[in-house]
Amino acid sequence: MMRHTILQVGRLRRRFFREAVDEYQRRLEGYARVRLLDVPEEKSADPGNAAEKERVLEVEGRSLSTAAESAGRGYWIALDERGKMTTSEGLAAFLQKRTIGGESHFIWFIGGPMGLSEDLKGRCALRLALSRMTFPHEMVPMILAEQIYRAHRIMRGEPYHL
Image (cartoon, rainbow, N blue to C red; front, side, top):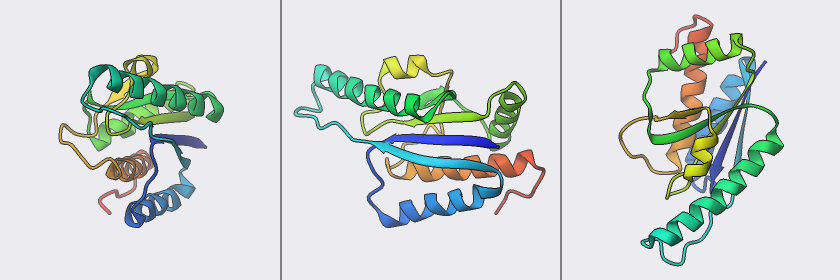
């Protein structure tokens, strides 16, 4: 069975976002195992300072890498606003192709408010953009979980406009 580990910086604080992610995890039970794990957000003394931003990204990047390595071997995917754009059908085809190629565990990285470190993005096999639009940080895990669910329905030839 396919597995997805979603690693994010920070926690889902708003109940409705957490409930939405829980709902998609429940819907995915017959298709794949999905876990949402978080690492602490690094506090910044001066978020406008470039060196301080780099320090925060590096600390968070190390935390995400450690969590990913603890989750086991997998195909690393960074969510990055400058990443590759795809459709829901394209995501389904990508996951199916990778699975046929022997992958069964996909590890997704969601950065904090400042994004992901260049080092971590460089270690990922794929950089994927959910959209060119900007979303609230807490909304991203929900959107990703929904798209993973939609991709699995597409892979099975099931209706997915639900």
